Amino acid sequence: MPRFFLTAKGVIAGQAAHHLIAVHRHVVGDVIEVVSGGQVFRAVITGYSAREVSVELQQQLPSPEPALNVILMQGMTKGDKLEFIIQKAVELGVMRVWPVACSRSVAVIPPAKVTDRVARWQAIAAEAAKQSGRAVVPEISTPLDFSLAVARARASLKIVAYEGEGEGLKQVLQRAAVGQKTDSVACLVGPEGGLSMEEVKTAVSCGFLPVTLGPRILRTETAALALVSAVMYELADLGGAQ
Image (cartoon, rainbow, N blue to C red; front, side, top):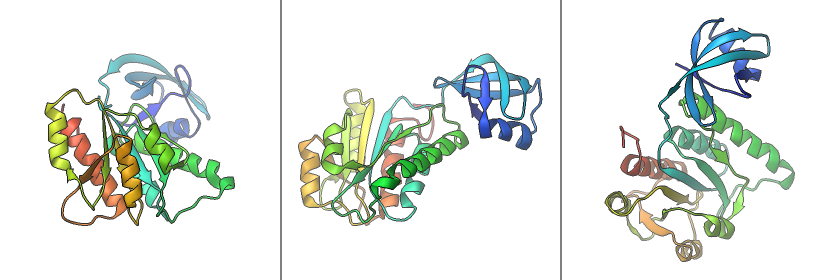
């Protein structure tokens, strides 16, 4: 059943309201699922107009959100790769995505276009959250300088994908799963050209652990989603209940 985010108490507005009535053909009395304050509820439609749908909350449902808080720190990529990464990372369950400007990043966003670009990324995240039944819309930040990003990251486990050296990701995650409580993970992935040795050293100085994803060289978008998938499988709820 599709889920709709409330824009105000008991109200679905804008494009979501149009979609609910014109596309799904719902009418007064129909039962739907809505999201409010990060919680999912079963609700009954009590009225609608061209711009709004009113609902009455009936029953709180189990949350689809993972207990693990995952942040993806993604090196800026060219073309529409970052949009693809954001969409799929949200579907997998990340809570935040930080685009990171690295020394080898080819993509450069003109300052005048940053606000519009971030708004587009956030809209992609919102649509992915809706499509995948999330109860929250993950936050997409403005692009951050590499040094600022790694210094600002806060997590129980911080890992950086690096093909040059590092411990195997499988071993790191299995150790985290049986060790002390890991409630948050920061995943750092470089752009198309990868991270420089200097950037890896900077990340390590900020508490990041270099990990390898295996013997094959992966594209940045593949590496990001493989890393997030492995983290969500080993430490969260991908594949079944925790």
